[in-house]
Amino acid sequence: IHSVYQPFCIDTNIHKIRKKINREDKIVFIGSSYKERISKVNEQEMHSLKKLISIFEMKGIITEEEIDFITTHHKISVTKINFFIGYIIRDILILQLCKLNIPYKIEIYGYGWEEYDELEPYYNGPVTPGKDISKIYNSARYVFVPAQNVLQQRTLEGAANGAIPIAYDNRSSIEEANKVDYTESVIYFHKTDELKNVLHKDVVVEKDLKHLLKKNKYKSFIKKMHKIIKSHTLKDQRN
Image (cartoon, rainbow, N blue to C red):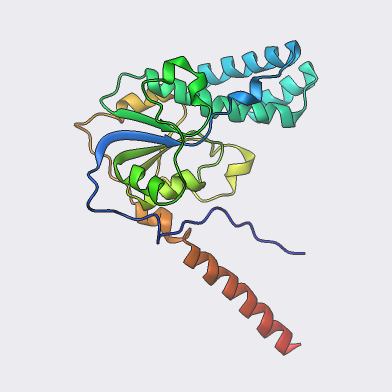
């Protein structure tokens, strides 16, 4: 059966600009910690995890070749390695962001971050999905997206609420290679040190958030489905 990939969509009835909320010089991340992914690892797995962290901190990226090498030589499945990489890209980048000397307030919401003592000044607990998240993003200049896929709910929700996405750059991966590049709407980075050159109050970053949202609204999704159904209906009629 022929299929078409459909990424996340954004509900612009909930996520929208709220003019009564003042936008601050603030970076926000909303989502759970992945620390539990490394809570029950054996000695061999921990060795692989440390190797992955070392590569990531040095280069800002872990290549497919490096993943293949570690899975082969350490006898660990690709699934487990990707599990670790998800933790590294999220938790390690959050920890690195909070160590940067930047003139922006940082706020972290979600579950599990209380496990990190160093994040206590930035952690604000969990938040209810929907309007509460919209209000938080409306108060922020940027939304932090430390993930393997840029086109996800944080990117779209942040943009719809007027917060510019700062996203980990994973466009060279096989998974991301065939997807749309949103350079017009997103600030991409490999290493958090790169953000020091961007996150200065005297530098105004301009991004076209409407470009990102245009094709990723639920209305666009419905139009896509309607077009597919209509084309097949006409085809059936001809047959």
